[in-house]
Every structure is written in structure tokens, then in C-alpha cells.
Image (cartoon, rainbow, N blue to C red; front, side, top):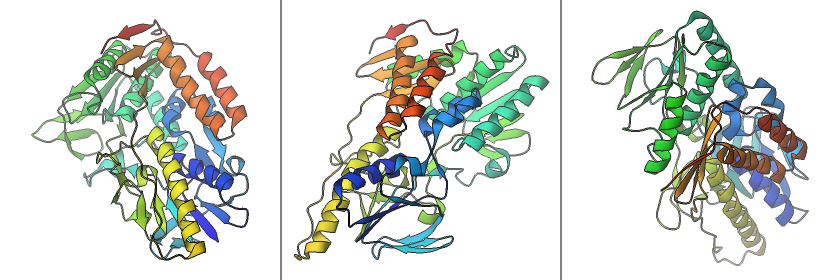
Length: 389
């Protein structure tokens, strides 16, 4: 029998490693991903200021697998009922599989976004953002970040502190645009306040209630009138499905079932959990969904092998919030239960989470190097602070 895991992001790697441990040795496992390396996505913003972290944040997919095979290919289409996958270099069939292809940055069809803005999904994006911003620092101009979710907050913070490092804080403006009424709009108010304060301390100009209508070579046009000029534009305004999913993120129930032979985990789908609530798109969500997907793949294979005629009883995913972490340049904000932490305690927590993830997938050397790199780069805004909830 054959199991296919499509995608080697957080969900895909976690799922493949669990299946390696739980499935019999006679079940073949193939992990399909067009890239050679797995990226620690939730820390990728750090590459904007610290390019040397790339080796710690990118790990060869093969290094993370035991007996599974990594097939380096791009998924072009799939039939989740038949278990058939179209690849750029051929095809693949499976008895049970999981779609863990993640998502791409959404431009919502807004004219000019794809042509003029840089997303932040891959190390090459971080490298381009850094290079463009260094040009901005030399000319004393403006960088605009669209989208004040966690990604937008993090890249705006990195840019502001990079300007400080370059001695260009007074000459360069970093502006963060958000269509909702606050930064981090889907988070609790005390978390929003702490994030806004960290951004303000770094001189980031936040403008809420600003919806982008179009983008041209040097300005963003806003719904309702008005423009915002830019010399560099970074776009973090949401997520959409990849090409293999037709640009969509299908909604699935708590059993994560996408088709007769296929489950889905991570950002590739919109999951409604066992409580009837939508699960947020995040690294922690993807890894925990992988647990459920792995169990259900195993049950489906057992059902297909035994052929008893009864549908397998599937595990259901239930979202359990473990807290939230966001870097704002050298500052960090952590939501732990009802309380919000800032300063050294929050930064240590985020470093521990990042290193812990690397260690959990077997990248021990990268985990150790990450801790040393992060501990060795303290910032001037690192006094501990706690705000109540």
C-alpha cells in the first residue's frame, strides 16, 4: 500500500514523521514537495535583518525523514477521491493521502499587487525585502507594509529596527496599513495594545481602516479615495489556495476529510473544528491537525486492508489555543492565557518555541544554532514588561 503526503511544510513534515512511526514497514510513504528544503516559516521575517539565520531556518527535507521518500516535484492537480496526483514531471497514485500544500499570499485580484509588491513566504522574499529596504535607507524614503496580521507586524518591526541599525531611523518611514480598525485584529485587546505599543516604540506609523483598491509603480490607491506613496511595498494581506487547489482553500469538517482517499491539514483548507468553530491558519494549528490526519490515514488504510464494508470511525480535530507569539523587531509580545508578556521573557519564549520545533523534527544542530544566534542579538527595547488581561 502507498501513502502520499503532498507538501513538506509544518503539517506535511509532522504528518510524515508520525506515519513513519505508526504505519507498518510494508506501507510506502512518499512526501511530494517541489522544494529541496523545509522552511521554519514562522521565523522567516528574521532573515530580513539577519540573513545568516538562513541555515538554521531551512532544513533539507530528506534530513527530516526516516524511511519516507522525498519526491521533489510540483503538484499541479489532484483527484482526492481516486487518489490520483498530477505532477509537473508525471503523476502519482495512492491508497491514502493528505494535502498539506499550505497557501500562497492572496492579492484578492487587486490590480498591481502581483507586479509591484513583495510577499514574505520564502527566504528569497526576505532577501529581496532586505535588499530593497537597504536602498530605501540610502535614499531616505518610505517603505509600506500592507496587512497588520502577525506577518505584517513582524516584517514592519524588522524594517524599523533595520533602519535603526543602518543609522537611518530619522530619514526612513515605515508605514503599516490595515483595513480593520486595529493591528492584530483577530486577537484579544490586551495583545493588540501591546503590539501597537511595540510598533510605536520603533517609529512604525500604523494606519487602520485603510483598504487598498489598486497599486501602481509608486503609490497605493485606497478605497474611498486617497493614495499612499511608497518606495518599497511589502504585501502580507491574507492567504489563498495554491494552483493545485484551483486557488481555493476548501472548507472541511473536523475529520479533515477532503475526499474518499484524502485528508487535508494546515493552511491548504479552512477547517471547522469539532466545536463548530473555524481554526486559525498558524503553525501550531497545522502541527496539531497533522496528529488527527495521521490517525485518520492509519484508520483508512486499515479499513481498506480489512475490507469489512463499514466506514472507518475517524478522529476529529478540536482547536486548542496554546497562546500566541509575535516579534516586533527586537521586541516580542506573547499571549499566555489571559496575560500578555513583553521583553526578555517573551523573546526567550519565542526562541524556545522555534528551537523546540526544530528539535521535534530532528534538526538538533539547527535548533542549537538558532538559540545561540537569537540569544546573541539582544535589542535596546528588551526591558521586561507585563500587561494584565
